[in-house]
Length: 223
Image 1 (tube, rainbow, N blue to C red):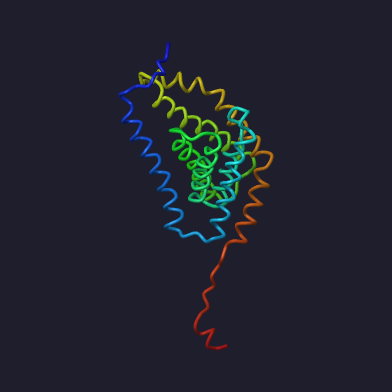
Image 2 (cartoon, rainbow, N blue to C red):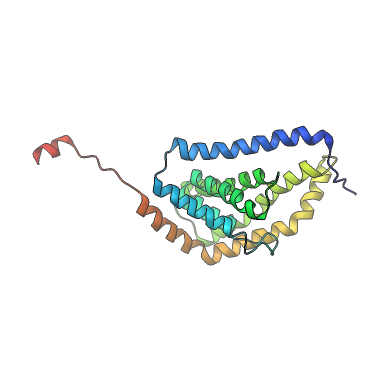
């Protein structure tokens, strides 16, 4: 089977609409986190720091196909800081790192893909407050393939013609080795540093948490 990877004129409008929809989804994530919840200056600084670390993590490993700590750091961020913060860290990491590695039509897809990584990690933590090291390793491994599925779908919609289940299967099969490298890299990072990073980030998060204590009026008057 031969795939025609020439640009398909009939897909131009569909691709533009889809890219716009993904970009708006990314912006919606930022809006829900920063406008609705109103994070403090300390929380914004922590999110910016984690986003920068996740973005910079791609650069030293750029020579190794799909092996980088970005997904691992986004998972840790979402797991500790919550779904909204996880989405923000993932989307920002994708956008920031692509200023160095190359911006293009793939950027909105990467923003949403890594945003979903962080969001799902936050949901995982809310379902159960603590997980074993191996459970987190399995989660990181799974997202190596899920991230690849999202990006392979973008490649299939943009460059492959005709669009069919056969061409989709061939596209995914062509990227399976790279997705496996991504998954294994995620698992190794999570196994070696996952629990320790969670404790460190939780410590910083607790320092930034402000708790309000309601004092009853009767107690104030008695004093």
